[in-house]
Length: 315
Ligand code: ATP
Image (cartoon, rainbow, N blue to C red; front, side, top):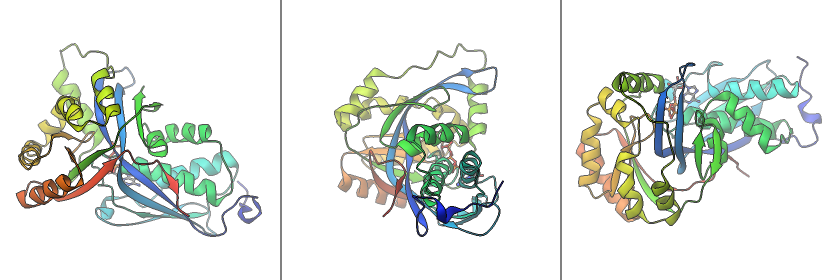
């Protein structure tokens, strides 16, 4: 690989580039039986929420990406080349024939190993930040393809908004979504997504797992912006919830505490252990968050809204 003539690229950024990227919650997560390759077919509805990481890309004179991370849970984030942000920089540089001479600083706010796609978000953010830093102006479709190479949840982190995901979740179709308000209860410790899928396989062994299908009722509720309609479908919409609860039974208490505090509905976010609560408005969210904080059933709370924009370069 040749040294990167970054400054010569016509659209290269003059200084560091910062990208803001949202967390997601799966308002539906229908899981099929394990395939021969070990993956599961999914029908999932992703929703981006206003809880963000920020990734700043700065040019260096090194021969590979370096990573720094600050914020809650940052001690759990790998700083080597297994970090999805570093892998994104390497992937984009290889495609462009550049040396990934970049430092990626992650300001972490998305719970680590929390079922909110924090690592995927950083991968999408790093891809967009390096694209701007290096002046590549890679077409959107190609960026989405690179995202899919990095991981199933990465394309949605770039796209944001609300989208139906099929395949392993990487084949996206945007769907309409009204505005909703959410409280997230961050759990003590994380849960590994592969472990939760293995528990799903164990719990469903010997049963006929139906092919995953998007719920028309859920999509209509999401489009309507009516929180009561969405609340009616949420408690049974995450197919991984039984597996997450089996591994972390104490999450049932968090779900009960959120609903007792006035949430319209609660569910496990993705593979957990973060739990998500739909609330009527921001004021209700602040009350639910305060009661959850006082309940001792979670580590922290975040009050958010949806839909949020996907990965965005900050001016
Ligand atoms: P998902 O919802 O996509 O299943 P998650 O939100 O549960 O993922 P992540 O926060 O993405 O989980 O972290 C999963 C693991 O990925 C971490 O334990 C960590 O080892 C690794 N990882 C790699 N890059 C990152 C990153 N930038 N931020 C956080 N974790 C990362």
